[in-house]
Image 1 (cartoon, rainbow, N blue to C red):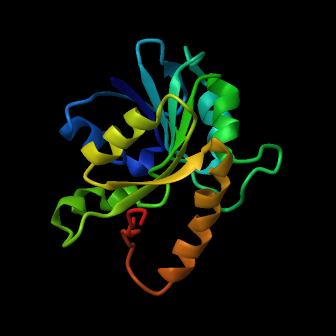
Image 2 (spheres, rainbow, N blue to C red):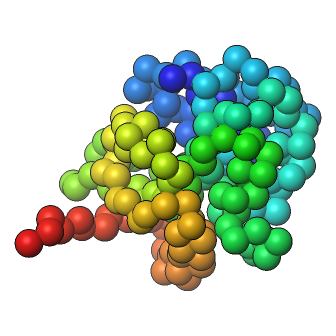
Length: 181
């Protein structure tokens, strides 16, 4: 799987660093757009309000698998059920919502955590296994939320995490997944 990653300049390391470390070929697209035709998967890591500008400048997106790491801050988009659905409107392919709740500037700290952090995700059918592999390769434990229809929940959770760290450093979270009894 190749990963084509579009992210704002201030988040240069973002998803690219753990992707490269896990052995993925990462092609970084900067502002101003580019061609994503050679990519198998496109990771979108921009603030929610920047989705249209970022993806509108990229060609070759049709049918691509998209990893949506966008976050609903300062606000979501009420024209779509979730930002993941907005990303899907550009790609037309399957979408997985994840990597939006662990701050990219802390990805280099994942390996030194006492317990592996979680990465919650919501995904279209057919990309769950690839999504879980990517999350695991990034050093996190997958925490499934369900289908893409549940993508709004982790987008809205961004507000809770920002409130929790208002007076402290950026955090990496952990959800404990209990086996069915």
